Image (cartoon, rainbow, N blue to C red; front, top):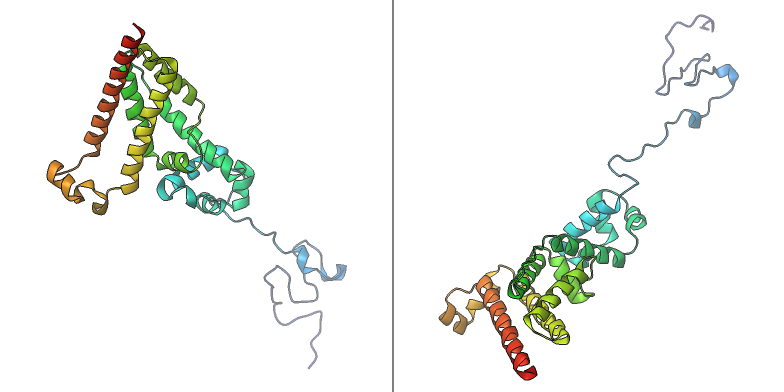
Length: 254
């Protein structure tokens, strides 16, 4: 039985894109079938950008994330892929923001050291100057292992304020009575002591296997070993050595 096309007996089906299945169907853009076939691409929705993956980062965001990774996992684990995963962006986005990894390493150290040097409160006495420098530098190494690792594997700890710190300590040693050249080397003696001490403590961590009193002689004499006592005594011995050197220099020039 033929059905009059002008009087359909059933409601036309509606497609997902808004078009009807009848001959008089209407496209999403308002055109009817009489205007010509409706192309699918005209009604396809534009692809949506994934949420939570911004295309723009600040250097501050990258450096913050890099500092966390380096301190938690070590500099060797720092990569554009690791940074991208932590920041929720593509690795290339990180690269465009920060440049090369060598530049990033340098910036990590520079910012971290500058933050610590800003906390220095310098006393007047040269012994106290040496003590403040050594203790603050040790805290920096223990709090931010990335600084110790970078110093050991890459380069000296250069930062915006590092020259001013060196000049302050060397100047105090000159005031104590050391010649300029010896004052500079005395600074390095203190510096190397701090780096070495922090390297041992950070490297061994808190594991029982790394504790010095596991050695029989250490256990017999000390009982329980203290890194704080060890550091304090070492610094006192260095200070006493500087004082002895000053007396020797003074008697030689008199």
